[in-house]
Length: 367
Image (cartoon, rainbow, N blue to C red):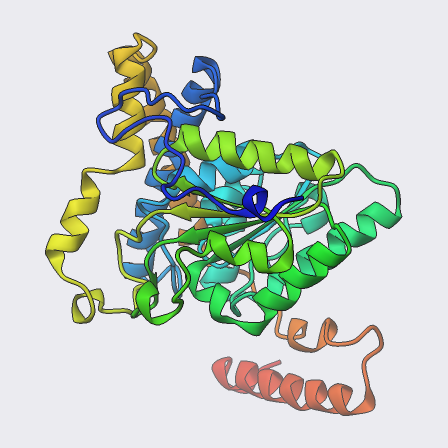
């Protein structure tokens, strides 16, 4: 493969502009209208889930929530381009993509509520547990893809990360291993301009993050991350390339984090409100809505039905997280090792004794 074939475009791929108008492209074709309608439904639901989860943080029902408000086109496309047999390896900000793979919204929030497990069965949904450390899941994704190929499985792995993760050593190790061994994995970087408070200009001097692909011998591509049609087209081609034996790819989606990094972050300290305001006009949801309305593919009744469905999902999420969990203290020790060590057993007996004494004290010493 020539180096020119590896280099991304100078400008990101775009198929629908911020006003909702179609943009012709010499290589990529926009998805058909039914697929775009499905994407719009998922965008509306994803936005409502993001906003509801942020409210649940303020109510104390979630410990933290890294919102993907404004990045939902990337989330929705990541879920839609995969077949059932494929696997998604998400980050902590990818709850909407996880839900798009069939995980219930309540289960997708379990980790963010502070529980000890991921909240869902990875094998059932083909979704790896959410990864909080940056880039660690990329190594796991590559290893999983390579193992699937050794087993003769027709599996593609989509590994998600943010721009901050590209500054980690694990990112480079994963890219190099995937390229050398021709693993069927697609690296999908959601470049939202900031690694917490660090802007992209302080992370990389490369022309784009997609340009990093050429150093490993794999193709890179840039896409407008707020144009769900373009993300579907570019990611879809990369997935099919990997499935057909073409090896790994690096896709960089140019998007923006509209809200703070998490509820613990004050984003006014490192970016101006005018900058955030400018990105509102590029909102992926309103962009696709304008396109569908112009095409006569989205009526007022459709919008009311979709909004009602999204509100129903938000209500179910509220109900699930407003219920107090029935916790078993022994779970602290039950799943540490396959067989409990004498030291762990001793610690459990000490805790059990304290629990029993507290219970007796509450009943006035009556058993």
